[in-house]
Image (cartoon, rainbow, N blue to C red; front, side, top):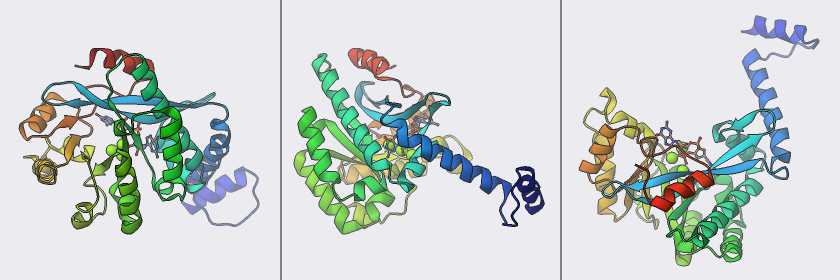
Length: 288
Ligand code: C2E
Ligand code: MG
Ligand code: MG
Ligand code: MG
């Protein structure tokens, strides 16, 4: 509350009467600290990609991996995306970071191919600012060409809100990527603010059911998994593959499989792991 805030302001020797809450202040300081550190994280090579497998529910085979960004801070240790992605977006750093992610993921796909591992799709998350950036397509194209990755192995994960922000531009961009053979996935499906009729006009290959719905399969929120089975049915009718995110237990797996969901991703199969650990899984082709 305001009293506590003033107390803290005085305690820290600030002689002003500005109204702020202690929480807001702490958050602003933390935000600034993260931004300052983010600025040198790229050149100091502090970013890593971890990979989480996507599994075919019928065969238990790995069909692809999702690249997930990790920040190995020299003092703070491993920082997860929820702590810094939004800040990177707000200060524009997501553009060079996103390019690093795409390039690293494509290089990794080529390294695995060269190790004799049969090609799997590699999915990369693309944030709003990246997707809207005027050079996004040209840069992605350049990365595809310099790394020599098979474009049909690359999958871009976009959320509904990113796609819906400017429907005409999204449609043009998606068409350009589709012409290259790149796959398009809608991430966190069901949580966004999208119009089904527009979604239907985009060239979407994959729907990723958000983990909140998967979690609700065996809880009272959605006792018969109605939302999940509805999304699976919609994907089937629109010829899209459906992947369930956040699959954590055998009950969810069984429900998803019984309702015709194509693939699953989640701790039940594997947590996100580093490239070496992922390679070991890819060598056997399975993770359970
Ligand atoms: P997302 O794309 O929806 O990724 C799935 C998130 O769920 C990942 O969190 C993953 O570790 C987590 N997860 C996977 N399986 C399970 C499970 O069974 N249970 C639970 N509770 N969680 C599970 P992570 O890696 O912390 O990433 C969070 C979000 O940050 C991602 O959500 C994505 O939106 C964003 N992100 C990650 N990497 C990148 C990146 O390279 N670029 C951009 N722009 N965003 C990224
Ligand atoms: Mg994703
Ligand atoms: Mg997701
Ligand atoms: Mg998410």
